Length: 596
Image (cartoon, rainbow, N blue to C red):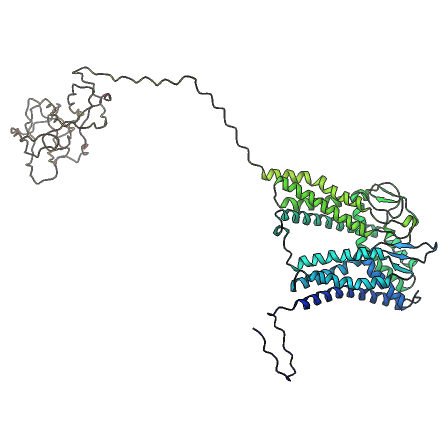
């Protein structure tokens, strides 16, 4: 929602609306001002410190102009530009090219923050205006510092100042756009980002381990380092200046110690070497606290070999980052190689920036050789990390090995012959198979359409007349006569005759009487043949209807004797105790299976 405009003469200014975009000219002007502010803050800070020390010095070498000139020289030295000192004992100008790395961090950080803010509030083009504003301050400062007894090398300033400013501006523009990943621009950007991150971590571990090694060396030579403060300057202001210079050179000490731990070492003059394998060729060095921490000349020392643990730790950190990504074998090898190259490049740049000339002759080159340091920083990870990282990646991504199947024999050349079909056995006519004592339950064959008349079993000579109640026509339940006393001898049911055709399966008897299952009884029957009356019943559905046959009356039941029953008695009798119920299925003879 927009704010209402202020009334004329009210004295209140209208507040700007945040929803209305700012004009492009205003954004460009703001970005240029941010660049000039980043350069001016560092320059004003250095000038304030130099003026403070100049005021506190009892015997200043120059006036106010000389102090401001030194501040401009230090500002250019922070960007990597070399200085030239004309007033020497030999009369030959002596270059001073050792850049305090801690002093370089301040302008780079301010320029990074200014560019990120300008790009976040504006467009990507604002980064160029920030860089233009910064260089607009660097040009007059270079021109001012180009004269005097201690002046800046103009060519070196024109090379190093724009290079450092461009690097910080590019990093700030990337941060201002939200730090987009490289994978958003290229398909392989993710692997490149991983290699850069792993290489940066490895370089950080190397520099941190070098700082520890340098601190241990300074503590070991603390007495000699402390005596150099009084030898360099007696006044308090001079000693404070030496102390501040040592603080600014602490990152240089860390880089030099890292190069020492990597193996190539560094030099403190022409023909000198300081490495774990030994130190030799020291020239006449100035008395300075950091130079007092140098090891004595001689062969290798056990403490020097112990510093080799620093690159081992750095390689382990680099490999942990690469293996943690769980890439395939080929990609893992490329990422490890890229990370090793990044680590070597970073250490090479730091080694080149931390060293330089301190004079002529033997002090023309002080510090580590950048190309040897870069090669050693890249070789350690390649040797220690690449083989195990590739092995781990292969083990993680390998496919499980399937078990080998046995070889299948070759099929026969001739086709297999079908097995001979067994011929069914034909039973002779009139053959009756033996009946087993144990009843069997064969499968029920299909019932033929023709009625089956089973043979009547032989009736005993003595008649048996059980009491049979009359059967009602409306009664749905089958008739169950009373069961006579049970004999101790087992009951053997009669076996119906077997059909002449043995090939035909056994057919149960189909009676014209109602389809009531045949229920054999266990008790013995009287020797007299029973003649129970046969009540009229409905004909069975499977055969033709036949009229019921009346049965002759039978005499009362005789005492139980062992004989074959002629009629199926029922298992229950009111006078006798309850007996087990008879099976509901008729007896079926057991015989061989019917043929097809």
